[in-house]
Length: 290
Image (cartoon, rainbow, N blue to C red; front, side, top):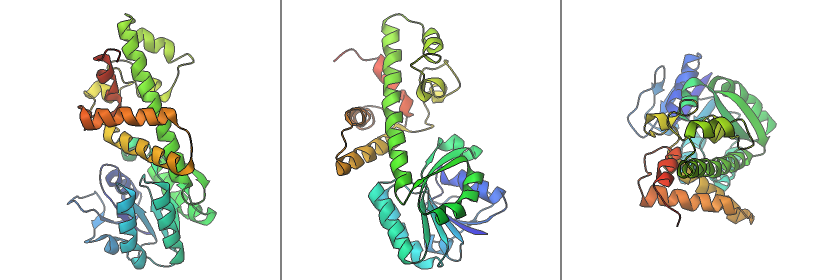
């Protein structure tokens, strides 16, 4: 099977490498000058898509996704499959899926969770939207690049699931960081705090698996001076997508809105740019009550 892979950044690069390692013929393209083990590089996105039975994209935003759609759909064959693993707005996901369908191409929006580590280890979770037929054709590749794939519904459902998931993630990370900062001011040892909360009703992924306090719990970016596993600016992007979706669907999301505002300040007006999203803890521990 020939696979075209467009977008070979921090996530796409190891994903494409895992497919090549599994024996697929992968042709890749990225606007940056990159190389991927086992992947033949093309001169354009259209060239990468030409003749491919499956095309995978991993792109920064909906505007770029729509532009790439204009380039690759004319190069793809009827009956081929397009798997978009970008995290974008639901409207863009649905628009390019409709465009692909008119050309006889099966489209799946399949944003991922698991970060750079999950991409390298092949342990990503895919949240997929599209027809049953499209998901069935994409499933074997999900098994190589990840550990779980959930078919969430029709086109756009994968993006909806990702946006909702990451709104929860952003809100709970802030709550976890606030709790550690409060514990500090109350004189509570961080390890004791973790030992209680991680086995009590305050249990969460941000506490138990990705603890924002250095030296507490499993290894996390906090133990590497908050070098990003998931950058704060990417969290901000996803939170903004959640609020865009909330606005368009008339959903009341006050905690999501508050988290968006906090990450906006952290990334755009403070020193959060380029740091992990868990670096909200050192931000909060230095602050008093406003």
